[in-house]
Length: 181
Image (cartoon, rainbow, N blue to C red; front, top):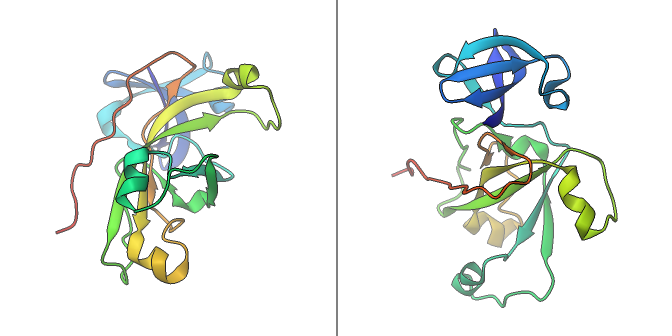
């Protein structure tokens, strides 16, 4: 089971994807997973980003190999940065490569979608506020980053897959289907 947003008759809708079938949820979206409105063939809909975030909080240099690859030390505390919501797109949407960039890199990332507005909670409380997990592609214009200080946060640069709900341990894999030549 995957939680999805998709276009239904030209309007965004929420649903549950199971095999080839997509169950459209009611007006409350993910808030009421038992409220069903319609059934669609999965092949007949366009998937959107799994949620409409107010912001994307990301962690930089979170992989030792990546820090080494960039010639940087692994930080002792997390390096957080924000990406605007306009970066988030659906799993099959096109990534917009900036025209002035010649070095665009991608990184598969684990995305965690928080369902509640929370602050300063204990680590033990965190899982109850997670709606689900997704694969996200963090696309960075590296050469633009060195010139402007920011190679991230460009419109349409963070494709995201359907959500895996809850807190079960699940294998999540990201795949790069193609790269520009």
